[in-house]
Amino acid sequence: MTHLTIIRGGRLLDAAGRAAPFKDILVKDGAILEVGEPGLAAPAEAEVVDASRHLMHPGLINSHTHGSGALTRGYLDRWNLEMLLMAAPRRFGNQSAEIKYLNTYLGAVEMALKGCTVAYDLTFGVPVATTEELIAMGQAYRDAGIRAVMAPMLSDISFYRAIPGLVESLPADLQRLSVIDAADATDEVLRLMGEALAAWPHDRDHVKLGVAPTIPTHCSDALMRGSDRLVRDYDTVMQSHVGESKVQVLAAKEFWGKSMVAHIDELGLIGPHFSVAHGVWLDDDDMRRLADHGASVSHNAGSNMRLGAGIADSRRMLELGVNLGIGTDGATSSDNQNMYEAMRAAQQVSCVRQPDHRLWLSAPEVIAAATAGGARLTGFSHVGAIEPGKRADIVFLTLDHPNWMPVNDPSNQLVLVEDATAVRHVMVDGRFIVRDGRHLASDMAALAGKAEAARETIASLNQADMAVAERLEEAVTSFCRSLSAKPYSVERYAAFPCRCETPEAGFAATPA
Image (cartoon, rainbow, N blue to C red; front, side, top):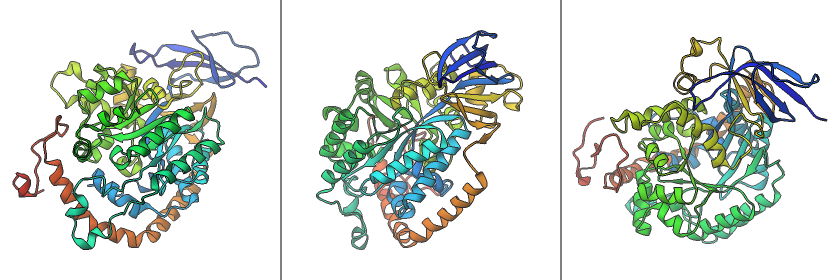
C-alpha cells in the first residue's frame, strides 16, 4: 500500500548557498518525490509532518567506524594506534555474539540520536567474524533503524610481523607472547568471507556486507587480491586503513620499497569501490593514484588527533580530485560517534596546517563530505541529499535551541556550532526512528544496564590477557617511537623533530 507524507513549514539546508529557505517535501513510500515551495500540492491522504521551527538536512554519513568498540569509550587518555592494535584484542576480545550485537546496537543508537543515518562499520573477529555474528551485527543496525556497510576486518599477518624488526627487538620471553601467523590463514579467511557474502540475508539498501583487509601490511598479497575478487564478484565495497600512522608507512617502505597506495595500486585493487580510512600520511603520488581511479578517503580528524597519528592534508586531497568522506572512527579511538563533532574537527584541523585561510576547509565542503561524499564512498547512491529520487533520510534540528539563536550562516552553524543537542527528529526512509529526541526502538535505561553487565563480563574474561598486554606495551611502543623518528617523504606531525626519549634515535630525552 502506498504511503505518502508531506513535510511542511521547515527550512531546508542549502549548504553550498549558505542558506536555509523554507521548503515543503513530498515523500512517497520512503523516497523523496518532490521538493517545492511552501504550500506544495499534496494528495489529501498524505500524512502531514509539521516541521515549523526546524532546520532539515540530509542524514549524516559516518564513513569510518568500528561498531564493535562502543563498550570501550573513554578507556585510556594516552593511547596511540600501535598501543591500540597490540592491546585491543587482548583487552576487549572474548566477546560473545550477544555482546557483539549489543556493542553494534549501542553505537548505532548513538549515531541515530546524533543525526547520522549511515555507518561504514569495520568490525572484527578472529580470524574473521563468523557469518552468524555478522548477520547478528547487521540486524543490530536494522533494529536501530540506520543503514550500514558491515565490513569485517581481514588479516593473515600479525601486528608483530607487520612492523619490520619488532619481534626481534623484544626480549626473548616477550617474543613468545607475540602472535605466530598460521600458514593456512589466507585461504581460510577468504573462505569464511565468501561464505558470509553468499549467505547475507539483509536488504542491501539498508545493510550490506563489505570487505575490509584491515591494513595492507597486515595482509599478504594473496589476501588483498582475494578480497578484491570477492568485492567485484558480489558488487560491494572495500575499505582499508592506509597511511594512518607513520609506523605504517615506514613499514610499507621497508617491505615493498614503495608506499602502501603504490603497492595496492600495482595489485589492481584501487577503484570507485575502494576507500582509504584515515590517509594521514599520503603524499601527492598516493592521492593522484586514488583520484585517477575514482577512490575515496575517509577523513577522521578527531581520531587522528586522539591517537597522535598526525594531521591529514584534506585540502590537497580535494585539490587532486579525491572523493572525501568524514568519519568518527570507533569509540575505542574517538570515544563518541558524533558526526557533528567529526565535522567540526575536520574543519578546524585544516586551519592549523597552513596560514593561508583560503586553503582551509569551508563549512560547505565539510558538509558535502559528510553527506554526498559519504554516499559515494559507501556505495549508497540513494542517500546523501534531500532531492527527488533520494530516500527520505532527514534530520530535523530544532531552531528553538541556543545553537540556532539567531540563524546567521546555517552551513557554518551546522559545522562549527551544532553538537547534536538540537537534534529533535530523525527520519530514515520517510519514517521516524528518533522523535522528540527519543530513539523510538530503545529503552535507554535497560540498554545502560546491559552495557554495564557486558563491560564487567569483558573485563573478567580478558583479565589474564590484559596482564600480558601490559607487559608488552612498553617494549612495543618504545620500538615504535624510535621508528617514528625516522624521516618520511611528507610530514604530518604538528612538531618535528619529535621529542623522543631514546637518545640513539638522535633526539635528547625531554620530560613529559
